[in-house]
Amino acid sequence: MKLKLDLHDIFNKGTEIDRALRGIIDEAIEKKATLVEIIPGKGSGALKKKVLRFLDQREIKQLYHRVEKDGDNWGRLFIHFRHNVSTGRRGRGR
Image 1 (tube, rainbow, N blue to C red):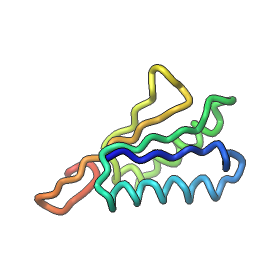
Image 2 (image 1 turned 30 degrees about the vertical axis):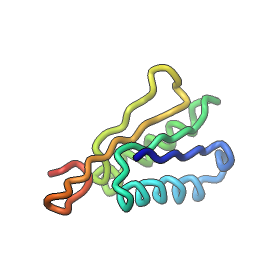
Image 3 (image 1 turned 180 degrees about the vertical axis):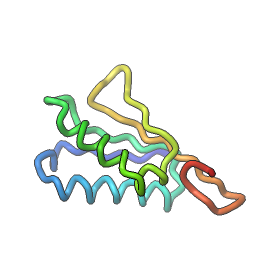
Image 4 (image 1 turned 60 degrees about the vertical axis):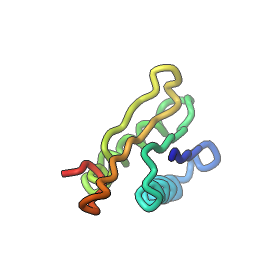
């Protein structure tokens, strides 16, 4: 399952961006999605940097497996998840 978050509508609302990012991560965990596509857009790159800083926070980073920057479209990021069903653990599968 793949989820998608387009940040174009809230690009200048910092707290809403954080809330939307946390919401899509929580939804991915709840629904056991393996991929989340985040579209910060191309623009100046400031929003993409904000998204990457958010994802790099220790408590957030432990929830997902890895982040991939789209080589064909630099206005898009992919967050990959691993869900370890047998132990009930999520995130990096430690």
